[in-house]
Structure formats: structure tokens, C-alpha cells
Length: 123
Image (cartoon, rainbow, N blue to C red; front, side, top):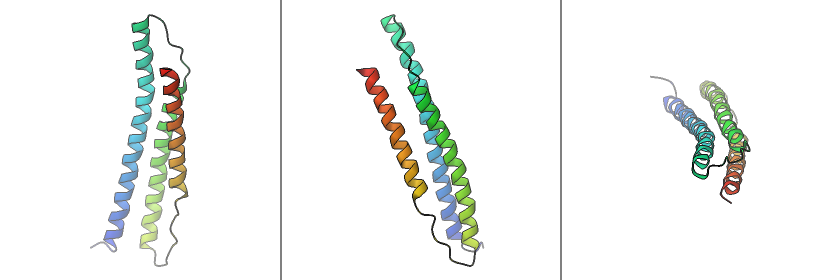
């Protein structure tokens, strides 16, 4: 039997949840970038005139993809660090929530920029 198996299993479940979240963030970034291309092509075919391309959706989409990649890297680092701390004999303080809050703030800012872009495209 693995020593402190339940702690290691919880650490692995947390890591896999972060990986799923990162994949979803990257997929959303890809979707944002592709949806902008679809909107431009559809409006060109329907109206007969080209819609001006600002590049906001491409930038936001790429930022979402890079943020997803960074989340995976940080999740892996935290996974291995936590695994070592579980096996350590001494008590170690928790990592805090700074990274989690920073990620949420970045996602909210990217979401707001995407919302502003969509509002600008509709109006």
C-alpha cells in the first residue's frame, strides 16, 4: 500500500482538474479566434462588403491559448511540489491562493475584452 494514498490521490485529482480547465481555456481561445474568422466570412458573403478586422479576437484567442498552456505548466509544478510535501516528515504551510486569484482576474479581464469586442461588432 502506498503511504498516505488518499492525499496523493487527492493531489492527482486536483492536478487533473487543472489540466481539464487548461484544455477548456485553450479550446475557448481557439473558438474565439475561429469565430471571428467565421463572422468576417459570413458578413462578407451576406453584405457584399468586407468587415474591418481589428485583430482583437485573434489576440484574445491567442492569450487564452497561452494562458491555458501556462496553467498546465504551473499545475504540473504544483503537483510535483505537493507530492514531495505529502511525503515530507515536517509540516509545510499551504501555497495560498495568489495564483488562483491571479488566474481568475486574468480570465475576467480577457472575458471583458471579448465582451467589449462583441458589443462593438454588434453595434
